[in-house]
Length: 294
Image 1: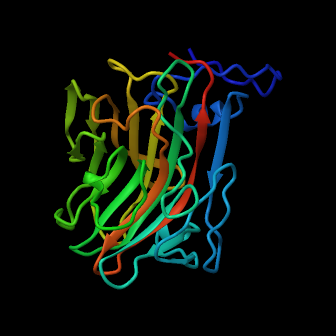
Image 2 (image 1 turned 180 degrees about the vertical axis):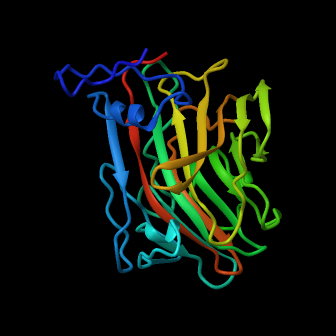
Image 3 (image 1 turned 135 degrees about the vertical axis):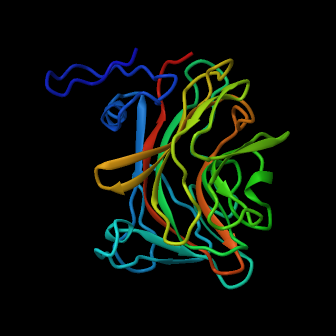
């Protein structure tokens, strides 16, 4: 049972972290951030220039590629939002931004290995700006950051949205996750549902890889404590069509091929390709920790 902070009565915060956020509204999730055991963080882009904005409670590391901040306009919902545009250099190069400092990154959260340890809720907003057949992309949490030639599906300890250079443009995004021993990908094609050893999930709509693509709202929740049995990592992905409308794409609890416990993870967006792919980022927020848990 989750107890929320009652702002009207001044009731003392007493958060109890849920096992999953699938049935929680954004208002309920926001209410969790007021508890003393939670450490909220946030980031939003600058409105102009080439400097990456500072985060609140989170440090953003080096960026690979060119940073710009497009002027807002009424051309579309995605264009109306302040954003940071990250463009890869000419050639088969990465454009990347992540938490931490240095090219190796410094993890800011982890999966716990005992009761009350670890845990994170992370919401990420972004969209694909330009695309090419040689492009790969990753949005989510991982133990290493973009660079070199490693594709998302071969990098250890990650979980997030992805597509690879071998995935044709116009196809649906994949959910990719991996331990040090191996991993798997699930294509987010509408109408899918699954219940089994890998977890439980439903795909209600498609999120299609396309230039000037829709604004996606991607949530990752690792509950504090030990993940075992049906207790896993919640992934929920939606499309934002305007400020008030979320179209559900994917929702599920993943219980296999997860990043290992006690492995520091970084928040990361990256894209790579020969055709100077670019992505827009609109903001990140969430909380770290969560007090007592199984």
